[in-house]
Length: 279
Image (cartoon, rainbow, N blue to C red; front, side, top):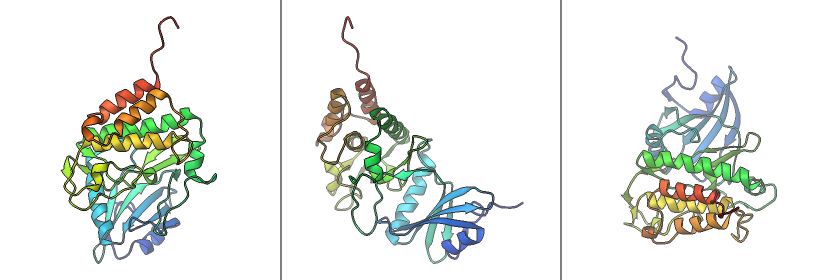
């Protein structure tokens, strides 16, 4: 039996040379702040794969967590990890199907990038008709209902985890390696993530993290995707939707929606509010 050149190998001495032997490495992502190096690989049969290698201790722990998450949670919007490869001297890599699109924000080790420049993916996404933005967010929301159903919570979710195919109008979720079973307590000074998307409790050692923290993150995602700019002064949704976002992002978790499902129900009702009598 002929094994798949990526899915049939369990250990390699080094990832990049192995990929060059089994196919063409057509993209390399080196300057990532995650501590990973990633590759786009085209095999001889034309199939394309995305391979992510952890090159730091922190990244290896995160990739291990991500592997467990992908065993527990499946959704069509979440790009799955289908195989992992051990790298000699303690490394690891995971294999995922390649998806077309652009991440809305590419976090690099070199520092912050501009989300507002006209050519940036986020600016182009925000310039789309609101109906397309709403459709993309609905797919993000639906994926997190699957996360909630599996007993997990979102950690380190931000616009860099959103891969949008502008041609096919499809949103994919990537790099969810910090997602974990919940509830749990914050063990370090803070959880990893972008301040723009994080709930206040994520910055407090010993704080209780549960699905209401995910509700906050989803509310912030809606707020930032449906605004015309980073200043959050140009909301493109309805007033009813903005009211749902405001409740989802209250500082006190007890004041938010109790579950992601409750948030989703309120959000979808606000997207299509009932007509007034006689109209």
